[in-house]
Amino acid sequence: SSRSRRSRSRSPDEDPRSLGPRLKVTEAKVASGDAKVEDLYVCELRRIKAIRQPPAFRLPPGPCALLGASRTKTLRRLQVADALGDLARWALSWDTQDDGVFVGGRHSGKGLHVDQVFWSNVGHNVSGYKLLATWPAGRASTKLHETMLDSVFAPPLTRDQLAALRGAARVVLLRPGDVFVMSGGVAHATLTVGSEELNMTAYESFVSLNPRHARHFLRTGDKRGAYSLHRGAMPRRELEDFKDHTIDALEALVEAPRPAVETARFAVPEDDAVALRAVLRAHAAATAEMLCDNDSYYRKYLRPRTREGLLQLPWHSCREALERRRAPRASGGGEKPGAARLPRYAPGR
Image (cartoon, rainbow, N blue to C red; front, side, top):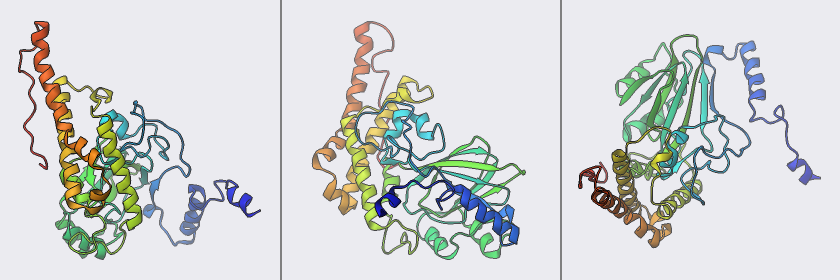
């Protein structure tokens, strides 16, 4: 029956998304002279079917910012989010479900583009060397996306490529083991350089709670103006689904308002932990207010109770700071009363 044909699992050799069939097609193109080995670059490599791979730290029950909390297509045993532990939950979104792996040889790379959503990317350059170029947000990136989309900056560079690089905001060299953060909501391009060693880089996209980053994310899908993309932007319905996910993430912060700094895979001194919790909560409160002030979807669907809970988050930090001030006095030792103070913080900086 048609139902049984649809439900039958295809083998890797039958699935056109699988790496095996694509390699056969590519090898045939190389053999016929229609493609060069040095130009080949594997993009967005991940599993076809999601697997259960819980994060390396305990999460509160229910939805949260981590998209791959229950099922993921990652090829990696550990992701950058695992290094941060519960701190990764303090974001509007962190895509641990569809993270990508990129592999290529010398002078191969990903052509210039702006991501479909104006999120950020955190990457781990596992092996080899890679150049990464990013351009200023707004009109400069929009123009390059329209005029030089998918242009790979391999030598010899054209006159247009040289002119574009002169206007870049950053050009950086990624070394083996480097971890980097960049905006995907601006024009960017990569190029593998160095020896004959293959370059492998993995990344996760995320939208932080920093109001500046969240404001940039809201420009996704603009129909006119400096941030409007005529090609490549996420369709409106999909973008609304993504915003629904960010609302779930904000609701989860209200339900579990204490960032569990101790779950990070690196030591965080207690004074730093207090300051970090204060900044994260202040970011969450400021971003919730900004989203509702600037976007009709959030005004409609972010519930008043959730918004009020987010605006109250900074008071948790005040209470914790007061408790720390009182603790030494009650025990008769340790730090002097008043030693722990909240950092001065202005939302949006």
